[in-house]
Image (cartoon, rainbow, N blue to C red; front, side):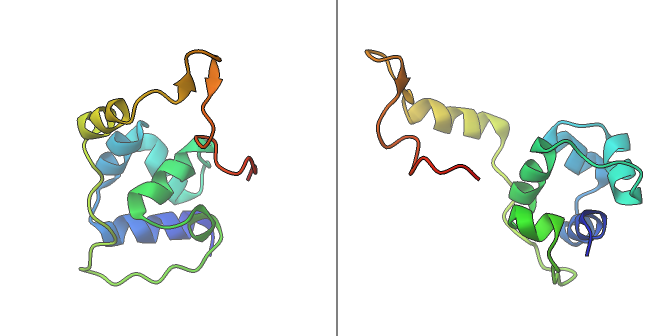
Length: 113
């Protein structure tokens, strides 16, 4: 299945309107409609946000075959933006002020995707 098909199925199964999805990932409703119609494709960061919104991997969203059941939520609704900001503030700085770069352990194993 294509991104277009997977996105359309996930949005419908989640119960989100095009406007809901657009608001949650910071695009216009018209952009969402164009993605569903296959008239355009989103910038790279938008599928990442969509995968998080629908609680699926990026690979599943872009290339995979996704089985969804109508009436069953795919995931808990994402936290409000204020909650996410408060969580980020509580986690402390990710930069070592003495060195001016990320602290050890904050970067992971250093592998790039």
